[in-house]
Structures are given as C-alpha cells and as structure tokens.
Length: 133
Image (cartoon, rainbow, N blue to C red; front, side, top):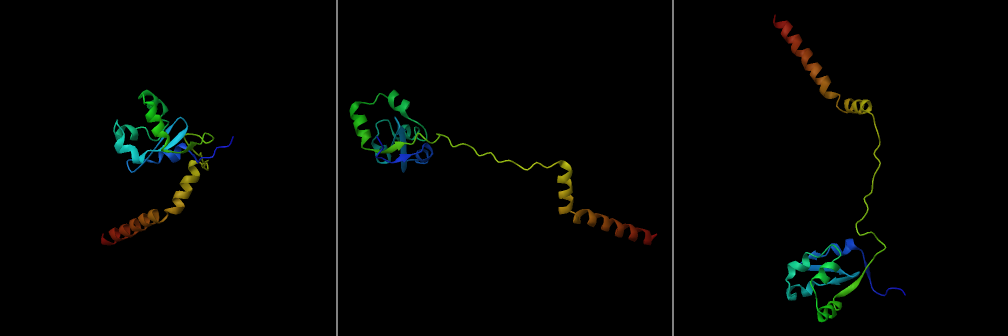
C-alpha cells in the first residue's frame, strides 16, 4: 500500500535541530515538536539532544505513557525515507597524477621573474662594485 504522507531523509530531519525548529525521528516517523518543547516534562534539552538521528531507543527508554504516545501522533509530519542512506556517501574525486618533475617545470614557468630579477640585480651590483675599484 503506498504511503500517503510526506517522506523525509534523515539529513533533512537533522537540519531541524534548534529550539525554534525541532524535528525528531521515532519509529520511522518524523515529528515536528517545536511547539511542544516548552511543555515537555523532561525539558527541551532532552528533546534537542535527540535530533539528527533515530531517537526511537531514547523515546522507549524514557518509558513514555500511552497518552504521551497518542499526543506524539499529533506532531507527525511524515515518514522517514528508508531508501536513501542515513549518512550521505562521500564523493571521491580522482586527482590528476603528475610527477614531481612536471610540477617543478610548471612552478618555474609560473615564477620565472624572481630568478631573473635576482640574476639581474647581482649583475648590476657586481658591475658597480668593479667600477669603484
């Protein structure tokens, strides 16, 4: 049976992790509990600590009552998209391999002015020194 509610990735849910915008993921469902933070009996810091990851174990370990579980359903905004990975995969880019000789040649082509200036100044200073004698 197709899902009729909105699907969210874990990355999307984890972006809502402040007191002004707080989402938690419990049992594969996404809850926007922003308006409930001030009313939460355990304090808002407990809920904020559960953002950005699956908080099912934390929720179950707290021993919430049936009325708390019913109240929680009013904050449900969608389900967790399990088809996408919880942590986005890193893209590995291939770097063009160059040998050190090629790097040296590129470097000298780029900064040829410095050695030429040093040689030029040395020639001028040498010429002036020999004229004084």
